[in-house]
Length: 89
Image (tube, rainbow, N blue to C red; front, side, top):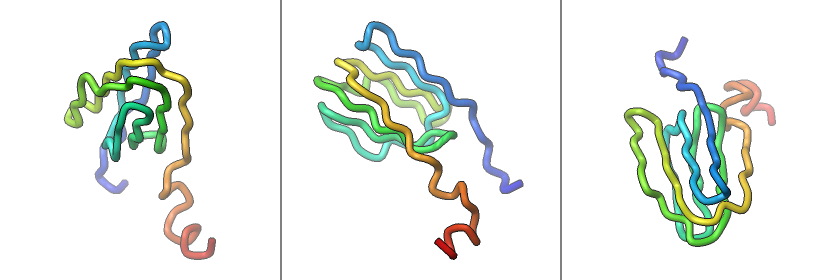
């Protein structure tokens, strides 16, 4: 075990206008059209319009976003393959 605490990840979308997420480790970048975040299950790209980060608490892993949500795109964890998997890819 690497000592890192893995948080459970959940996502709740209400009327495509309010998004609440748990298990958020970091928010890399955001603007009115997209937000990129790292979660306990990999990276997520949130696309839409008039997006606004209403709340971000990295201690609890919570993120709240408002605006018009158009899409979510998940990417696998970067380290999911392990050291040797990345070395020989």
